[in-house]
Amino acid sequence: MTTDVAIRVEGIEKSFKDLHVLRGVEFTVEAGSIFALLGSNGAGKTTLVRILATLLTADAGAASVNGHDVGSAPEAVRQAISLTGQFAAVDEVLSGRENLVLVAKLRHLKDPGAVADAMLERFSLTEAGGRRAGTYSGGMKRRLDIAMSLIGDPPVIVLDEPTTGLDPQARKEVWQTVQGLARNGTTVLLTTQYLDEAEQLADRIAILHQGVIIQNGTLTELKKLLPSATVEYVEKQPSLEDVFLALVGETSADNGPAEDGALAGKEIR
Image 1: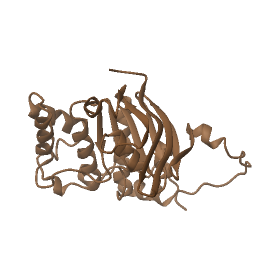
Image 2 (image 1 turned 90 degrees about the horizontal axis):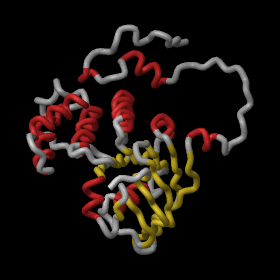
Image 3 (image 1 turned 120 degrees about the vertical axis):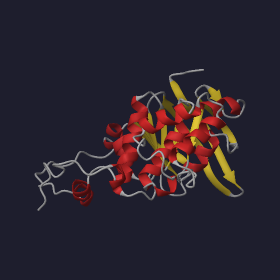
Image 4 (image 1 turned 135 degrees about the horizontal axis):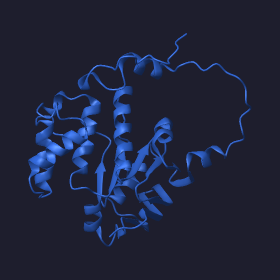
């Protein structure tokens, strides 16, 4: 079943004894878009994700994924959604390819080896496919983790704080991967506490605070909530992240050297 709305959340509430974590959360996610759920630690992001993934039951409200109700049709929801948690769930003893083959076999797909090879190529991990996953950099592990989540072509993928603990290079790798998912038609629900991550990736951003959505809109719409800035001439200096990425390249050393001319256009004073 397909729908223009890939995820619908209506009045979701969840409490743990006297702790009210979610207090009537509501939003929709359009199919093929990137939707960022932005909030600080303890805002309730992971609790909501677990409800959408049928790992928790809401106390009140309703939610659906790809047209299937999470309460009444959990099996259909699980077939439509893939969840990637805050930490890469790869077996570090196995090689990258063996991790992918294992997931393909668990999903009962034909020719798991071919599926694994296609995923390695899609996520630029072919050369590293035969190495133990434990030797991968943080960004490579996260890309492998996302590749494992996409086996079986789920229309919706949920990324719960996917760049937590990653260095700037690895974050860039994951951002490029997420953008590629949306270009290929996958709906992405991204939870994050990083403002720049939501700004870079999301088509729409919802701010979750103390268990409720306090604002929901595009980046342009959210910026209009504040008064217009006074226009003044300021000489922009590069940030430390700009300098770091220019010096070492936008991809990690595991994936090859930085391109020549990486400092082009970067004036450091």
